[in-house]
Image (tube, rainbow, N blue to C red; front, side, top):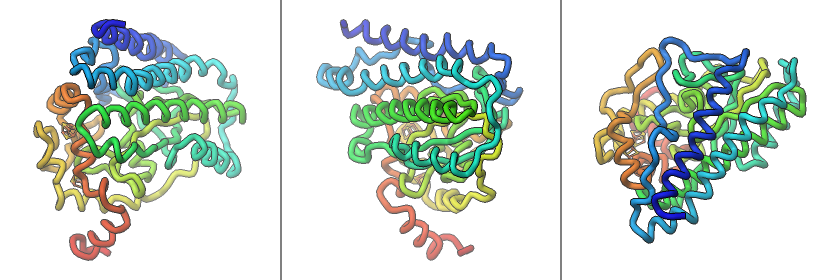
Length: 326
Ligand code: SF4
Ligand code: SF4
């Protein structure tokens, strides 16, 4: 494969896995479509060829051996996620016994998923060019490789990002198959190019709180994680009433490290702006070009105190010295 042809190969892989198959979901009779307030997906999957072929020779060789195989895994997982919808039961079960949920948690752990949470998807959190199949969702989070991520921006950060995308996509497919075998309807939601706004859904599921960098911050992973999901027919998932992580947002208001250190000023000093389709944390028009030119970025992850320090330690200190409502 020549250097230039890799960009077109990746574009074709994205188009096959996302564009064509996305339209199949939209045409399903049970498709749940976005609301009038939904925003477009901010992830250019195949609109234009990427420009990985322009990387310096040594980096390009690492891209070919470390990143490209994971892009392929992502697109294969995505294709399987759509094709496997045909295996859903015609009349899926809607109520799951406790032992099914316990077994699901064990399966997720065996698949390398670090935490799961449950919520429902309001239509305004479905991207305007997408659709989903069930409104109940199991959110999945997996921590990225700290060592590689710590060398961001650069190819190491990009490698762990795509490796985590790929393994989460495969885990989502495994869990969807597991639920189908138990009589439930399920649809895997990929980590790369999901159909709904994952950080906000994970926050609703009580898995963490969104920091000023727009990322979910959790106990155990800080901001260094990626998200995927499984949509399901199960209506009695054990949803949480309260989110115990909301204090993180008040911590952020005192910290603002990521806002100060973002090289292109893509993060805002002011609290995230609420819009009908969710909250706006990141100026994507500023972040994306820098991200693409530098083979990923990740500075707003690695410079976050929650990346280097234990969540529990920060919580204890924050409540003692910064926040008054202990
Ligand atoms: S990924 Fe980089 S450019 Fe984008 S918001 Fe974070 S620090 Fe800024
Ligand atoms: S760097 Fe500071 S402000 Fe930014 S997300 Fe992390 S804790 Fe919040």
